Amino acid sequence: MGRTATFDRGDVVRAARDVFWSRGYAETGIGELEEATGLNRSSLYHAFGSKKGLFEAVVAAYLEEVVRRRLAPLQRSDAAATALADYVAEMREAIAGGSPRARSGCLLINAACGPLVDDEPELRAIVTRYADELREGVARGVAAARPGLSEAARAPLAEAVASLVIAALAIARTDPDAAVRSLDAVAPLVAGWRA
Image 1 (tube, helix red, strand yellow):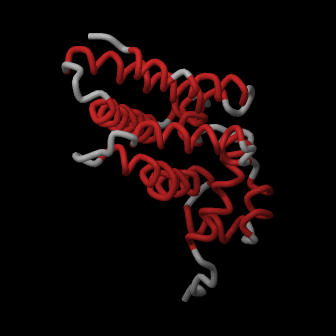
Image 2 (image 1 turned 180 degrees about the vertical axis):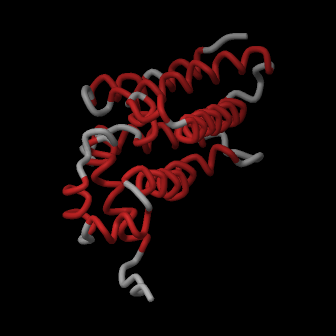
C-alpha cells in the first residue's frame, strides 16, 4: 500500500508555477522543480505523472487564480464603464512596479511561444481559449466604456485593444518599458476611436 501524500497540492502547484513562469517550460529542469516545491522527483512524478502533467496543473491553477480573477470585472454583463481602464491600470502597475511575476509576462503567452505548444494540442487549445476569454472581456470593457459606438465600430476597437494587451504581456519579460507603452496606448485609442 502506497504512502498518503503529506503535502498540499496547491502549494506545490504555486511553487512550480513561479519556476515555470520565470524560466519557461522548456528551460525548467526537474531539479529546479524539486528545489522549489520541496518534493523529490519520484513524489512529483507520482503526484503529477510527469513534468508536463505538473505544468498542466500549473496552467489550470494560473487560469483560475490569476487570469480569470483579473478578467472577472470585464466579463460581467453589466461591466462598469471603467472596467477596461481599471484592468489595464492594474496590469500596467504590476509591470511598471517591478512585480517579478508581471515582469515575466503571461505564463500562457510565454507557453504559446515555446516548443511545447507545437507538440501538445491540449495546451494549444487552452491558450486559444484564454485568448478568446481575453478578447471577450476586452470587448465587454470596450462596450461599457464606449456605449455610444455601434457594434461595427466596437469590434475592431476591441480587437486592437486586445492586441495591445497581448503585445504587452508578450514583451514584458524582455522590454517592460515597451509593455507599459503598449498599455498606455489603450486609453487614448478607446477615447479617440470613431465610428
